Every structure is written in C-alpha cells, then in structure tokens.
Image (tube, rainbow, N blue to C red; front, side):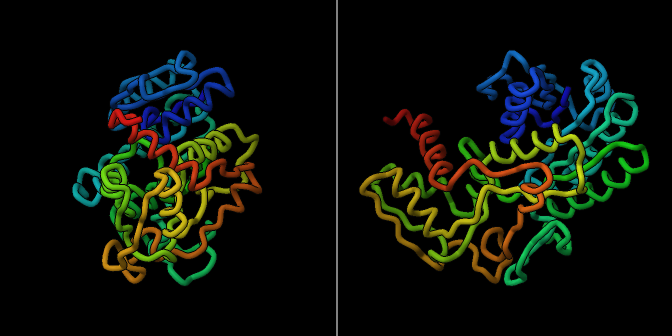
Length: 320
C-alpha cells in the first residue's frame, strides 16, 4: 500500500489515481481530502482527512493500511511560502519531520519519497546542464525549505534504514491550478485567457525566444508512481519535467486552441532573463537519470497541456 500526503492536491490526485489503477489501492491523506477531485479509480482509494503536523493523524493512518511506501507531497506552495515564511517553515520542514517520524514508528514503512523542486538549484542561466549533482543555491524560501527537507530526509532515512529518494519537479502547468503559482503565474495565464475568450487577441509576457520548463501534473505523478513501485532506487534524487518550450511555442499552442486569435509579445512585461525568475534564467534541465533508472518519460506536449488548460476554463465559464 502506498500512502500519499497531499493526496488530493494537483499532483496528489493524479498520483493516487494512477497507483490505485496499477496496484488496486492507495491512501490519499490530505488536510482537505476531497474525493471529488479524483476522477478515476476513486473506489479503490482510501481518503483520509488529517494534518501532517499531527503525528497521531499520520501514524494512525499509515498503520491502519499497513503502508510500506510513503510519498510526501503535502506542502505550502511557492507564493504562500514567500508571503508567510514563518508558517512555511513549520508546514514544509516540521511537516516533513513529522511524516518521517510516523514512518519510523509505524514499523511497516520501507520507502520514503520526498517531492522536491527545481527551485533547490536557484538561478542557473548560462550554466549548462542542470543534473541532480548541480550546486544547490536556492533563491527563495520555498526552495530553501525544500532543500533543507531533502537533507533532513536523506539523513533521517539513512539513520533508520528506510529507502529514500527525492523527485525534483520543474514548474507545474496544468488545468485547475491557482493563478498565483507555477506557470499560471509566470506567463500570466489568467489575463491571457481573459483576453482570448473576450476578443481573441492578447499580449504575451516577455519575448518569443525565452524558455519555460514545465511539468504536467500527470507527468509528475507518473514519475512519483514509478519511484514508488521501482524494485530499487539507485539514486537519492531525480529531476522531473515534461519539457522545455519557448514562449513563442507556448503562445502558438494557445492560438491553436483559439482559431483566429492573435498573440503579440511585450518584452516590458514579465520577468527578464537577468532577474532569476523561473523559466527565464535556467540552464538545460536534465531528466536523463529518471529515464535511465526508473523508466520515466513524459507523456505530454505543450499543445496537450494548453488544450487541457483552455478546456477547463471553457467549462468553468460555461462556454462551448
């Protein structure tokens, strides 16, 4: 049995669905566990409402299902960490420590998978290949807390004989996301969609040749599922993403979803390459280790991602 914290979040809901389909069961542990967010294999998932800061909540749930693998997804997101850093330290660091202690006390957990982020590397523009051994220089609270949690998890699991790895996800981009996080924030998707729905033209941030590396939630979930089900984990970290796309390619994908639309570029908008912002000052993100060791290969394209984002918005607006 695989126990997933944050099990009904953007990535968590896709992960428990995939695990339930592959193994016949999964546990979705979430402070706001909502079965309605999971579209497939819902009957095979045990939904548990609980708080990762409450040791008894986590421990009793792990023991109830005799879980052998824990995937720790629950955390505060980047924007929340930056606005509430003190609370973020509690949730993202102490929460990780609490889940790990529950793993130790359970007597059943043999593998712990931590969901990390590319933010642990910081700004890496012009520095070539960003593999898992690249220097860690986080430039925000979120990245610092994730890297601190990686180090804590790695040492804690070694001490108590629990198999461990971290999956470092690149910028998440998919339907139904909050507008202030991930790619939705970086390229201003809310304003872009509003323009395209109302007048079929818009101004895209930045320049056509700027790049954004993104990860669809289902691709992220698939990598985590592969790590959870692997016979052995050869490394303590894996980079994960769907692909790297220019802003021009992303804009064309939106135009494809809105026939007859016209998107222009305004370099004065958005983050500049020199700012260190995600997607505008990053080297080549290398996911070859995940491919080689756990068999991860992304299943999405930018066109497919944008199509899902637009379709979700159409449904939300009641548009045809």
